[in-house]
Image 1 (cartoon, rainbow, N blue to C red):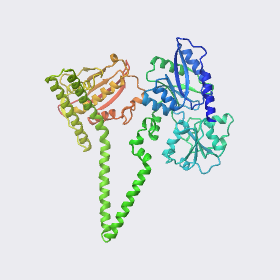
Image 2 (cartoon, rainbow, N blue to C red):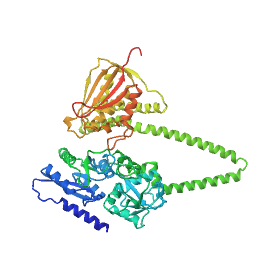
Image 3 (cartoon, rainbow, N blue to C red):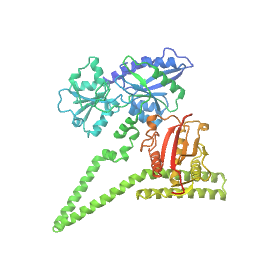
Image 4 (cartoon, one colour):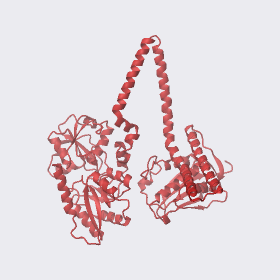
Length: 588
């Protein structure tokens, strides 16, 4: 039955998108669409979308290709698609792995904002008194369409996990009903399931169509959101985005976005908005350990407990049995002294655990900082070593070259050693070393070190507006670390630009009683909501970033009684990071 329904949806979508006329000069652009959404016009008018795109963008023929999640992922990997339309969780995974970029977000008529448009509604029959809270789902039969459906499973799975019900671990029995999603509600009616998980507003839409009575059902753990016209059981997330693949022509992507934005709402009320912020969906993926966070299943404590719970429990039981046997032997052998020995043993064990947890806590604070800061000198050492190896292979080696390279490698080694000593100082709550020296020398050294990291880094220009020999009292090694981080971020922001357009501008100036160092790039526009969070720990716009660099830079600035701020460039694209440091005075 499910296969027949799915085949019918795909056939109808294909008929809608067949071109009436195609010329040899037309370029075919495929739009891969996750087939979980209704393809028969319930929500989307595919023919209208295709017609609009063809009219607004001559020379291109847009073909919609319905696929399941696996097929969509494979088509993106093979470069067979120009655009992708899928739910937020799969978009986040594809963006992380293949670099697709969202250009528009679907806005359903029930939503008030693009940011809060979709979630899950957990239903049961109105007469059920034993299902009112999320925790009541433990041990119940739960009807779902598929475990990778967003509104039909993932959003609810996260809320249930927070309530102590892990669907993946089998805390409830999943009853798979397939698509269309209304079959989950049918499973309630026929007593095949106790609870059904559906996307928000499906129940209300079916009620308007006369297919069910709202009074016959009850929403479990309702979570109404002001302005949202339906009753969810979860928080609300952005709806499906339309994303362009990594190598898509930017002008074409812009025209597609403009066309969608200019479309009036469909007869069902669906419209398109500017791309929403999918950070909430990234947080959902992290909590469920899926998509770009799937590695947490093998690296995090929670993931290890989830995957190896039976083995760990067995090991604990064995250890417990051994401990019980040991205690029993001690009681039998030394009955008179056992209480004192047990007391001493427990005190010693508690002391060991306390010290161990303290060391782990410090290590947790140090590990990310150490890895992040050591990466720069190690990368420089590797670059020099590789350059020397190439020169050796070409026979262009002389004593002066070897001496110079060795000198630089030793310098970077000393720099790494200093980083380690600084981390130790941090762990022991000691103050960093402060020295008085010309700030221009520090900036020039940072630029020189940065320029030698990799041959493909953009050039750096320095505009020094300070008086000659202007002195600054600070930990200049830490100031260099801040500048190197800012320059590396600037280089990453311009990675997609032509090489001749990549340049980093540094201005050294004085404002009131501060020495200012401004690092500017020519990178793309950054949304205001992302700009305001750049200094938050673990927030990053890079797929492989840790989100620690700018947070560390800000803490260094504040430790010097200064500040680090960011703002867009005024007359051209890009960002300006400005480091303010107090001016040195002789009477200090």
